[in-house]
Amino acid sequence: MTDAQETAADSSLRTTGGAPPEDGGSSVTEAPIPLLEPREGIPPVVADEAALAEVITAFAAGSGPVAVDAERASGYRYGQRAYLVQLRRQGAGTALIDPVACPDLSALGEALSGVEWVLHAATQDLPCLREIGMMPTRLFDTELAGRLSGFPRVGLGAMVENVLGFVLEKGHSAVDWSTRPLPEPWLRYAALDVELLVDLRDALEKELDRQGKLEWALQEFDAIAAAPPPEPRKDPWRRTSGMHKVRRRRQLAVVRELWETRDRIAQRRDVSPGKVLSDTAIVEAALALPGTVHALSALNGFGHRMGRRQLEQWQAAVDRAKALPESQLPQPGQPVAGPPPPRAWADKDPAAAARLSAARAGVSALAEELGLPQENLITPDTVRRVCWEPPSADVAAVAGVLRGYGARDWQVELVAPVLVRALSAKAP
Image (cartoon, rainbow, N blue to C red; front, side, top):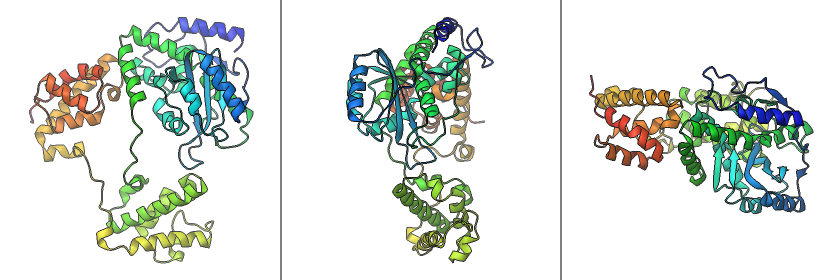
């Protein structure tokens, strides 16, 4: 930033003492300033062990929180690995690290152990950072802080503009970050993403404290940092777009076989599965159950651009599914752990439906009063589970159940009394 921009940043930070605006407008008093260049320029990309060692030394010697971000190649490559890691810390400046050339960043993670990491939408970046050896012991999530503070728009660009008064250029957010070498405009964009992240953190901490929500946020951040890696999703093929059209078990088997074949090919080629075969094509084949390559080629998604060899591999997958015995066909729907869909409650258990209606109304009113989204006050799944298999209608019992479902202390304190009242609701 220029001296004028730094002065403007200081000024904007001083004007954020009020509550977030109800109309979603800027929290600052001056017109937003385009943020065009990192204050020290674009740093060179770290792509060898010697340069990485220098970065580790510099960031270990820095002071205060460290801003961290990662860029993936969603829609281009298989999986969600990181293709660029950005960091910024006072005394160390900004670093751009190529995790393809430097795939093990555990030494950097260890050097920053105990330091607060500032991330925006932390749960999106933590899995790919974990893969390369970086996991925070403490963090501050600026997106979640924005939600708890009541900001209507919590994307990084909106938050930087509304809170700090700067406009970030977001035109490169969906590019193929596996590209090498990375173009200079992309590197500029990446460096700017961490340029003001610590400033944003400081302003949001003040706002949370002003609203009496800072302790809530700290509990949320601790829970994110302590959370174990997510379990692999069971039957991921069931998430194929358009699955609601597929009802027969034989058709489900075709979806499964095509999805798993596509996944193996995508992983081997390191490309996004959608670039191998679209979800639309998978569903079309499942519904049609084609018997020949010629019939398959007439379906949407298997057109004239697809070669004979490709068509044969997809037809072979369809044939494998068609040849399965009945006992090996997948069952429609997924086994559901927990309560049924709420739309079925009125018929299955009218009393539970009455409890859920009262609980939703109570949680909604409390969330509006507190100025935060309902799902951040308590997850809808937790509310459903409590209402479907209710404990005794007293605060201690409900509080124990909420903690068992992972609710934090601040959530338990606020929500337990609301749910106690809802558990006494009677069916009409």
